[in-house]
Length: 232
Image (cartoon, rainbow, N blue to C red):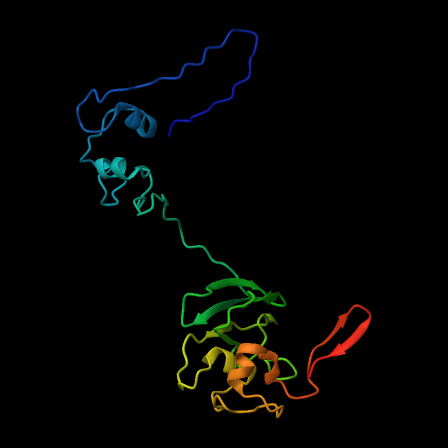
């Protein structure tokens, strides 16, 4: 194929470089002369020819913007490619991880990485998030609350990580399933349940302070000025 840019070295004599332009289809075959000259250096082919024998005519190559010199070069999206010989790749020490969501659509990541690589999931701040599973195991903290983001180490086998999302209230007691799975890991509690024994119902807990699902003595500690406060 023609070079769109050339470089040359000047010697002891003058040199002349000329760019040739063609703005017609002089042989009337439906292929612009410039296109034929660029790819083949002549006007010997017509639009019905298929010199690379890939089943795609030159007229179709021109219309698709694909390279007529590469077999199987026509593909949606204007991507040109060529077949090569068989290539052997040694993937020993590498494995694949897949991060997805259930239902599908919230997150979708996959890659092949070296053994020992540390992979971190996206953070899931949405209230419909229930929990992560890594190879089927739920990821929770010491209090049993789901982790909104987790990390895992790649070993010699593929790993599958799933974010479980719940957008409804399947047991119809006024509390989103995601809230229940995130804090409690189950749908066994009703709206009037008092899971931490503080006298507050789950419905009130949901709207006022989700953290109150945790048992007494497991509350966050914070600072206000110089005064240490413990919420209960």
